[in-house]
Amino acid sequence: MAKKESINKKKNHRYKILILGNVNLAQNDAQTTHLIELLENFKKIGHKAIILVPKRGVYYEKIPEIKYVPIICIPLFRIIINRIIFSFYLFFYRFLLGPEFIYIRFEENFLEAIVFSKILRVPVFTEINGLPLEEGKLNNRSIFRLFFIRLTFFTYLKFSNRIVTVTEGIKKELLKKYKVSPSKIKVVPNGANTSLFRPVSTLKCRRELRLKEGFFYICFVGNIVYWQGLDYLVKSAPLILKKIPNVKFLIVGDGPTKEDLLRLVKQENLTKNFIFINSVPYRDVPKYINASDICVLYKIPMKSGFSPLKLYEYMACKKPVVATDTKGLEIVKENNTGLLVAPQNSTKLAEAIITLLKDEELRKKMGENGRNLVVKNYSWNASVKKIINIFEDFKKTKNNFYE
Image (cartoon, rainbow, N blue to C red; front, side, top):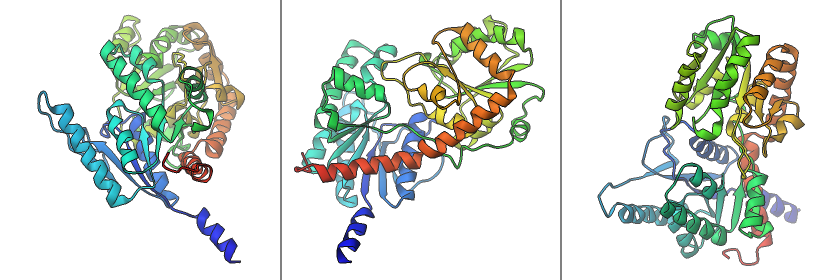
C-alpha cells in the first residue's frame, strides 16, 4: 500500500517552470497566444510557471505570473546593459521560484540563458517553431545577422537538454542538416483554446460585427506576411466572384505586407469585396471566424512545415478550411476537415473555395470533423500535457540530470 501511494505521489508531482520568451505581448499574434496558453494550461493542471519577457509591450490582461524585464535604450551600450539586466532577472527567479526546468521559445537574444542554465544547474527545454535561417532569408536579414542566428542556433541545439519542435518537418531538418540526436528531439504540435474557440451562431456574430447579410464570407485571421500567400487569395477572387457573385473576403490582422495587399486589392478592382480589419484582441478572434463560411490558410511551402495556431482555431469553431497541400497540413485531408490545394495556384484555390460554397452539407460535415479532431488531439491542454510527459521521460532516462 505504501509503495502504491508513493507511485501516485510521484505521478502527481507539480513542477515549477520558468518560461522565457522574447515576445511583445501587446501584439495579438501567434507568439503571444502561444506563450499565454502555455502559462495558463500549466497552471490549469497544477504546475507553477512564470514567464520572463522584455517589456516591449504589456498583455491586455493583468497576469501576475508574467514578469516584464525592463529595457534600457542607451546608444552604444544598449545590448550589453539589457543582457546584464536580463541575466539579473534570470538569476533572481532561479532562486525565488526554484524552477525544475527552463522552457525557452528559441530566440537568438536569449543566448546567455543557455550558458547560465548550466551555471544555475537547471535543465533547459528549447522550443523551435521554425527554421531560423530559412525565415531569416525570407525576411532579408543581413549576412551578419544570419551568421549570428546560425551561431546561436547551433549553441541551442548543442546545449539544450531537450528540443521541442512543433512539426515533424522541423525535426527532420534538425536530424538531417544539424545532426541532432533523435532521442533529444520531441514533437509537440501547437493547439487551440477549445473553450474560447468554439462554434457560435454565424448570424449572431455577423450582426455583432455589422457584416452585411446575404453574402458568403471567406476568412483569414493572422499576421499579414509574404508566406501567408494572401496575394493568391486576392487573385483567386475574380474567378470566385464570376461563379458566385455574393462573396466577401474578410482579412483580419496586420503585418509588414498589408499595404502591398491593399494595393493589389485596389489594382484588381476588388475594394468592395474585401473587408480589412486591424488586429483584434485575442478573445474577439472567434467572432470573426464564426461569422465566416470558410477559412483560408494558403501558405507558401517551407522546409520546416507548419503547425499553425489558426488552423486549429478555425477547426475548433467548426469551420471548413481551404489550405495549402504542404508539410504539416496533411491533417486537413486525412481527417476530411477541408480541402488541400496545390501551392501558389490561384485557379486551384478558387476552384476549391467554389466547391465548398456550393455544398452546404459538405461544409457542415468538414466543420464537425475539424471540431472533433481539435478537441481530441490539438487543444492547448493536450499540448502542455505532452510537454510535461517529455520532462517526466527526461528525468527517468538521464543518468546525469544536469548534462
